[in-house]
Length: 386
Image 1 (cartoon, rainbow, N blue to C red):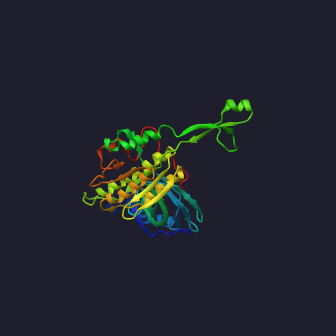
Image 2 (cartoon, rainbow, N blue to C red; image 1 turned 90 degrees about the vertical axis):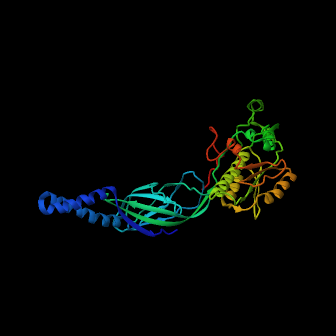
Image 3 (tube, one colour; image 1 turned 60 degrees about the horizontal axis):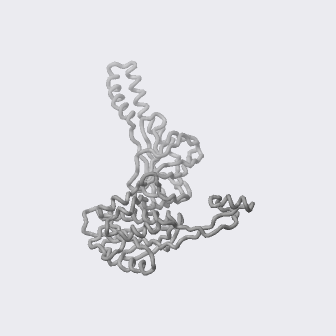
């Protein structure tokens, strides 16, 4: 994309400039009586304060920015943007430029990237560390380039509004021991332990194929047969996991509470899906609300990315979640799947022995930890999100 010009600019005194300004004014007044060196100092200080804004504006005037390419990131985690900064000036070099960025009104004033020097007519890709605090698609990025070169008395800021394609995936938490759930969710514990009894059983041996991992090579048999022999395992049948997220929340809650609870339920649904995908299970996702949306069963990193992408774009609606959950959970049980329903602030808990995870339950705090892994267990690596 063609480099863009700054939408607006501003100039402010730095702390050094704010100190020098009254000193220069006082020296200028005193020089009328004393003259001599005091007058020379006052003249020099006033000249610096007049020339500094002009020089600072001139050496930043030619800067243009090309927006970075599409990125997929996770909410709250730092990531690196790489906008291309170009100096369209024909003579002056840009020096000691800092970069700060944000999304919309969340501009961070702290420098996140640095450009020491950029020659006239040159361009450079500058790494800028940033983080997003809300999930979903972000199509605007505010970028500020600033510098106080050459005297450090005034700071010039160039404000760019860049069109971007940033997809912020919901933040993954961690599940502790599911056996610590309240007694009403014992079904989840039983299915969880049943899946833990092993995913593979020994089936036989066969010849090693080119490109296969060496971890399953049976070295003793390979030595006897003078060729590589690998163990072959057969996967045990496991019930697919069906994560159901209720997109409706109560509208009779304090201001701001529905949004906070729903964001927590989205993070919990993502964490549950990641938990079972890590163990090789097939996971299906259903977003139950005014319009039900289904994500087909998937495995591994590709499946996790599809699920997280759907959860990144889901929005909450007001209403009672029970009518939307009832048919989805019933069909999941009839299909032999393990349904895990996640909801936020249900007025009436669904009846029966269905697996319900309500983020308002205090007992859930002992199981679900948002945003941090339990102990040394890190979240399932996504890898290659660019």
